[in-house]
Image (cartoon, rainbow, N blue to C red; front, side, top):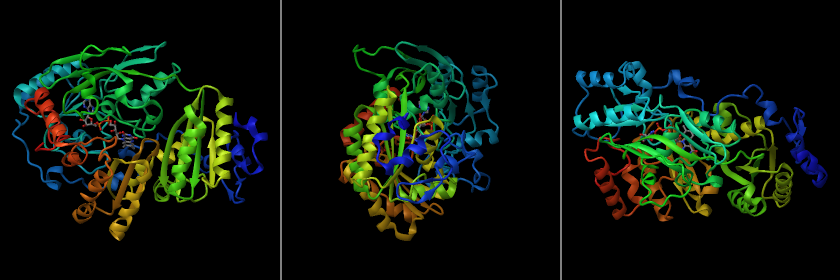
Length: 543
Ligand SMILES: Cc1cc2nc3c(=O)[nH]c(=O)nc-3n(C[C@H](O)[C@H](O)[C@H](O)COP(=O)(O)OP(=O)(O)OC[C@H]3O[C@@H](n4cnc5c(N)ncnc54)[C@H](O)[C@@H]3O)c2cc1C
């Protein structure tokens, strides 16, 4: 426990220690001398709330305005696919009895995206349980030229998960079985519809963790995570799914089952086909099962939440972290003061530290409590002593760690309660990461309610979000293509981790050369010649 190291700490660091102590005083003195209530004191009663509050249960959703049909809001034309007939429905009913949903009320949740900015008008939702059923469905749709939109947890943020017109929605919700888990190697094999949080619980009971974690874990599916090549909160430590996924089972557009579900760490037999489907957003095939490598559960986890006086200090604190914490550093996230205002205002979460222009969340994960505590205490002493950090708090127990993470993880949710959200998820050289936020504030002036920046700083990934009372074409015109041109000017990526979906397909050219786009189009034509899988998504219409 950190407490044991107290004698090494100067007197002004005592509040850190108090905050780590189970049953710490409700009121405590900060090193700066002000009185405050610790986060877990003030948040009493919210413990146990899942980080992702589902839209249906949010306090604002009942009064939420109707979402405009995507085909009315955006200039998009329906491609000449067949429309679903009574005969088609009867065929689906034979393939998956009682799992063909046509009730408009039930379809509503699957036609509208998590952000409530896109609405399709699909008339049918299919819920297969096995890859064989998926294969039968796709073979039939391929023959009939019926378009299909695969859907996992529907937490995607770029409009890829919901139909644009009347595409059939193919949900993986009932494909939720764990197939096997190897205790020695930590290799998990499961169906694509398993919810990430449930998988996390499953492997944690066996002393492992999932190599990825994100704010949407309570709803998103592992298949959706792979289809979007989700990054998330553990990327800094465990890297991309391109590295941790060992095998995949995919059903192709014509119903062919491609079984590459190996659990081998090394396999150089020809092209590594699974990589093609990771990040393909349902446009090349339906992922039906996954083999993934899970790291051992760390014995010691600490989270520090720190206030920084400027973005330069956020960057220097990151360099210091890397140097002083080394291999135990597992996450480095940042958020600006406006993000904190939004989580406070909309979600009633309280800041555990004094008001600051920026906040960072540092997580360490290691195998020896004393070793990690010693490293962390040296780092904190240095960061506070040198003025990189002006205030902070530290958590070592699970409940308090979750509460600190909630401040960062629930920003997305707070933003949706603020109005219409224009979302940008970009990769930039880390030293220029915040300049775009500052530029945009000046450019947009009072047109925007909020222009905020937060994200996975350790991965060079900025989440830039602009909120307004309602969707406005003129505000959109001021944002785009400005944001994309700015990003391309820094040789950044216009989609760091959320994917391309419907919303970003026309801007792929800012991050990829024409030759790459042509090759992507050729691969799409090879694997899905009729273009029935997730049409209108990911690739530009004219590549
Ligand atoms: C609060 C919140 C926090 C988030 N945080 C992060 C974050 O930190 N990092 C991050 O990367 N993303 C984040 N996201 C975005 C989102 O959660 C991820 O993109 C997630 O991986 C989507 O999974 P899903 O199961 O919900 O997929 P869906 O939203 O249902 O689908 C996403 C795309 O994948 C396709 N797809 C889904 N399942 C399959 C399948 N089995 N086979 C083929 N294609 C499929 C869909 O057609 C669609 O194009 C966040 C979202 C929210 C709401």
